[in-house]
Length: 84
Image (cartoon, rainbow, N blue to C red; front, top):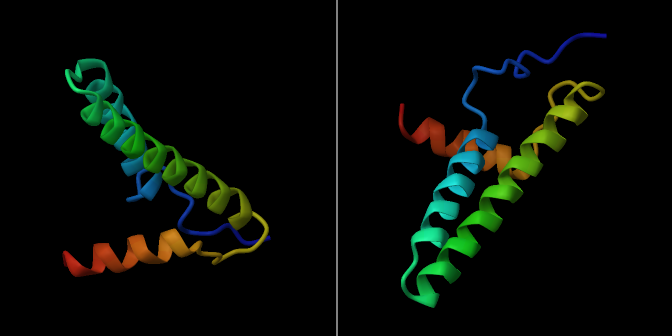
C-alpha cells in the first residue's frame, strides 16, 4: 500500500491552526471581563476543536484512501495557494 505524501507531521496542516485557535480561545475565556468576550472565545474554541478533529479524521482516512481530501482541507489548500 502506498503511503500518502501529505502525512508528514511538519507540513502545514489545518489541525495546527485548530490547536492555536483552541489555546488562544482558552486564554481569551480565562481573561474575559465581559460575558460576550467569553462567548466569542467559546465559539472560536469550538471551531478550533472541529479543525483538529477534521484533520485527524482526514489523516486516518488517508491511510486507506490515498489522496483523500476533506472539504475543510480543500478550503485550507485554497487559502494557502492565495498566499504564494
